[in-house]
Length: 134
Ligand SMILES: [Cu+2]
Image (cartoon, rainbow, N blue to C red; front, side):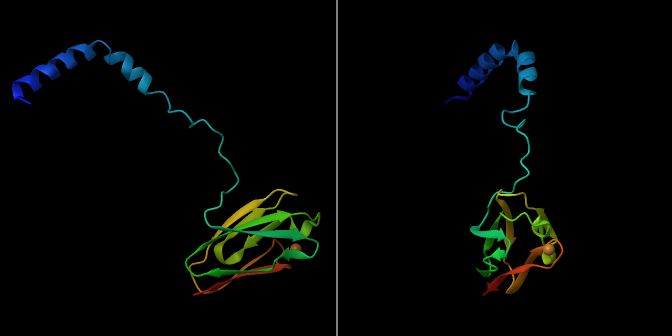
């Protein structure tokens, strides 16, 4: 394209859009759609999902195997009324979560080191573990 033609074209476009400048500025300041959604408290799984039933017997299963480097998404579903299991925590990761009755609660655990990652009831009486292997 010749430079002169390009200049002419931009001049035409420029003069056409000039009148709408103000209107454009006001509409573009509106928030983009979708940002007014209420923030969800629930975590979504970012790794391999392992369901753990939380019952009168404790955690089922109580041992979860993992490969070093993966993320394990523990999906706790509490079906016991026991106050003991109303919340869990993972001390080594400083994670604690409430476990509402019959509501899946996802906890994403990065298995980045070989060894055991303990998860337990909030009183630390009932325990389970993720066994991370290299
Ligand atoms: Cu307990």
